Each structure stands twice: as C-alpha cells, then as structure tokens.
Image 1 (cartoon, rainbow, N blue to C red):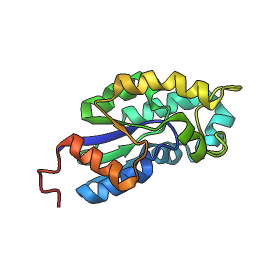
Image 2 (cartoon, helix red, strand yellow):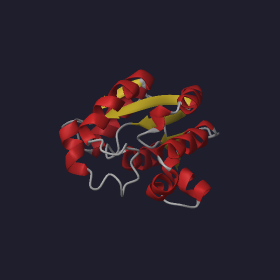
Image 3 (cartoon, rainbow, N blue to C red):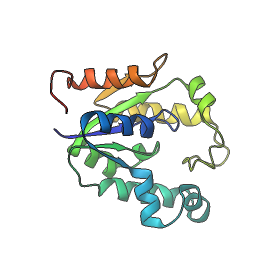
Length: 171
C-alpha cells in the first residue's frame, strides 16, 4: 500500500492521529515539521523569526517535495499546502487526507500561534488564516475527514473506513 499524507490546520491532530494510525497499520510515521527542524537545526518558530515567513515556506516546500518513503503515514505542517511542488510530490506518493476541524474547536486547541511555529503573516488572525487555507486543503485532498464531535478512535475509524482498509489484514 501507498503512503497516507495528513494535511489540515495546526491543532487538528495530524501528528497525534498519524502516530496511532501508523501503529494500527504497521506503517512508519514521519512528521515533516521534525524533518524541517532536523535539516535546519532550529525550531520552526526560530526559522520563521530569523529567516522570515517566505524563507520558511520555501524550506517547507523543499523538505516535503524530497520525502521518499513507502508504507508511511506523513503528518505535514499546516502550511504545506502553500508549496506547489511539495503537494504535487505528496499526491504522487500517496493518498492525501484532509483532517477538517471547525474554526471554533481549533481556537480552543491552539495556544500561541507564534510559539507553535505556525506560518502566519504579521497581523493575520486565526480566522483569516483559516479562510485562506480551507480552499487549498480542499483542493489537494483525496479524502476529507470531518473531525467535529469525534474522538481519536472515531476519527481513526473514519480514516480506515475511507481508505477501505477495514477489509484488509493490517497486522
């Protein structure tokens, strides 16, 4: 089976869900934000602060466009959708799943956006960021999973059902 790539807003659970999904399917787990930090030897928010948003987005695009793997769950950063090369590459190597969470629930989950290393323009609000990104997530998604009113297990089951993996032996 191919890779499964998780996209969505910061705080929607890509990394948390990705780890559990990888364990359940016997896949490898890759967090592209950690790949960026390893390559740059800095935290995401340090890259943004020191190099600027545009440079960060270029680095993110390069790192995601260079991921070569099979049978992996890849949790991407929320801004991966700004990188056309990255998204084209990810589509070629797997199924892209958009984890959709309503804005009000995201607001509850997120703390300081700058400390999280969120790719957000100066003066931009979570609301405007959400409005800007939703059409891009929808554009690139092969599957959309609505997480509203779902716990982790229910979200995982929705993903498995959507991938029609429940009929396969994943052990």
